Length: 227
Image (cartoon, rainbow, N blue to C red):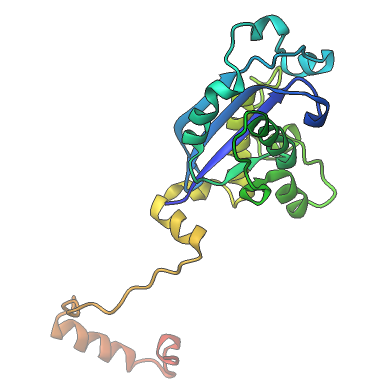
């Protein structure tokens, strides 16, 4: 079983080194590239004001964040949800940078950058020169964007889960969970010989009639020329 967490954040601004904070986290659990229905979502009180541009993009206002938990209040629950799974994010350095700034602020260990799978990088390798925004990829793969009036961490994580599935090869991944695990691990499934051969389906008379029919051909039938 391959478990991954698709993660998105909304923030007060663009740079954690300037004191900007996370105001919303959304996570979607995938198993073998298929959403399981398990999600994690919370708003956060950033203890600072939102930038006007950030509110314009996300629709999150300062008033909405009053009374919401601090990051330290939900950090362990977030870590429990993610567990040991890789993190899938669109522009992963942005989300990982903000997460690690929050963990550092409360004295918890940070996450190594290599733990993240960056879908922007995957898209740029797969479609060189093409737009790699989440909106552009959703349109490329005919993923419904009608609910995305504003950016939202959980909504964007759900959309990204669909995009990631397409970037990994398309919706055939969901046809067989066991098959997905084999593909993801690079394992090839092989089957040995049957312990006992199957009984022949033709009778002796039918086999004799077939042999007589073949003798009527002037040349050897093509299916008997090989092997």
